[in-house]
Length: 249
Image (cartoon, rainbow, N blue to C red; front, side, top):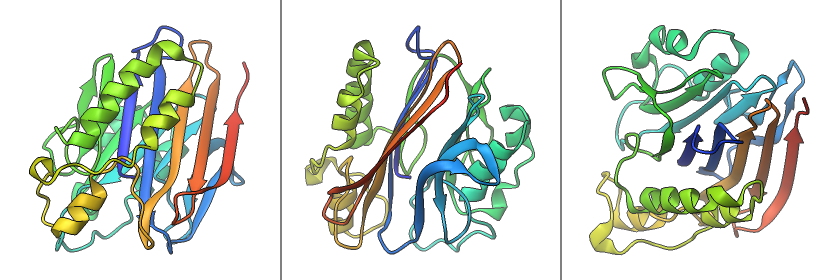
């Protein structure tokens, strides 16, 4: 997952709202968003290579999402980062307690967002302490929370502008579909070759081998109802599947 924008109590009727793109190699086997057979309270996609998930939510509103920290040349961690989200969704621990018991050195660099219905927490093994986030709109890509990367700033601005239109989803999927490449002078310098910096500067990444595999909109309403809408894409950027899973209260 390479871009997540979260509205936490930023809308009176939707206390949790998430718009996210998952970027990954197209060859990596993936299951689209669905209820998990062994834990049907969880709604999310599955990484079929390591068994975790990049993003998921439960019927009760527990939410977790992870991105990697772009660190070319670093040795891989002991465990897959997708286990961080999976294990939180399977647990009943408060977000702060869950984050406190993580051993960050066991994983490659990660950004982790956790919501337990009462709080939204950001933690990273590239920061010293987890952060409880007050109401607001936050974004994370492959650096720190709210890093001033052009694509992240643009996505947050469009997310904010789209909030009054809820429950209409169109504006959120439009912002996630933005393929604009950032000018060279505005690119972050993350240690990858220039052509990759250009490619990865778009909100929606497209190439033959690597790109945006899924765009997801998740929300929980004030009455507790949960909804996840995922669109999956092929290497040409065409939609190949759309999944909508929701709960009623």
